[in-house]
Image (cartoon, rainbow over all chains, first blue to last red):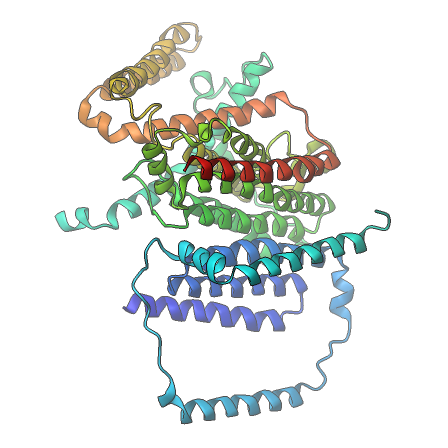
Length: 168
Length: 392
């Protein structure tokens, strides 16, 4: 399906371009916007994998929740001052050398072991769809870890409220 | 030609084009409706100058907004300032894609329909926050921060109310939700012995806050913030923000109707003998009465052109009423008729709220959201879950 291929490359490009822009923009709000672009690209990739629940949750949670909070914090700090400060990028040549070395390793390993990879075939759309499947797995197979994670989150919420308030 | 017409994508693409092209006009007339109804509440006449009873006012407003000078503040963050209203409009109009006007008349029936609408309203916050920040103005920034905080707070209550509805329906697909109401033979607002009325009420309140409407219109509180996040916007870009706001109102009203009020179903869809009075007599009577009322009103108009215009409108309404009596036409349009009628009832309620309640203070807003609506929503979810399980 060339449509799928086209959209895969489109979303991959959006994700990567967003990621690169996030680290290269000097203005923090522009960086946050690029990160949003990248997250939306990932959401698109989820949709191509027929994981429509993950697609929606990715946008609701990351773009709508976390990134809006990011933007809040960025808008409330003094941006001009932060932009004028010296950037810690004096050793970019060392960083570049490390990145190239790791990239060379990955390319080498991938080219040697390419025969060992097996690509999973997308399964035909299952009964009821993605939402029901995720719910089944989450509430039957992994019920205890799921509930434990929710307790952990609750503890974090209560802790942050106690730390933020001077007097309870 | 035949293959093009029968292609499964033809109807969705055509409907999407119609929505995108026609909605600005609908939004304009919703604004006129709002001005007229508010005027009526305050014993005024409202817009009367352009066309009979101000019927052409939206078109005059649109022309004015399009040809107005587009001012961009010198110290604004230009790319974000230009992009922000576009984000708002695109997300608001995208949400229409999963709104079913009738069983066939819909752009897409995806099995995460409600989540798509939540996702779009979540991204829509960005348009407001960025618009307020990029203008480099204190009023706009404060308005944007208020709006962002308000939207995030009320999204939680909204989600709890939606969850109760989804739990009753057993599906996230918008078409599936309406079909579930047909099968259970009850609108979900009255499901579980009337207990679902609580989440429906929570949804209505949270929806008013989500769309930044009075009494929760703090982001654009005129007396404090000039115009809130869109203080620095003018002309066409300002119009885009308003288009987005009215599109959001339409979408939240559509979700309310779909989830709690039976979508495109007529009242009592399972009682066959009611079909003739509700599907034929009622729409005809509605159109006939509103068309007929145009004629005595036209006699009192001073301008001859306006009087003729109002008579033409009346004749058109009578014609639509007569068309609705033809069985073939009736079958095709009765679904959208009921859907739109219910949506406009909700929109009327929104305008009514605006005309009735004074604006809340910011701390009151947060109290209502976090200390009232969210616990009530959680409780309603719990009670409805238990009752729904016990009923089987």
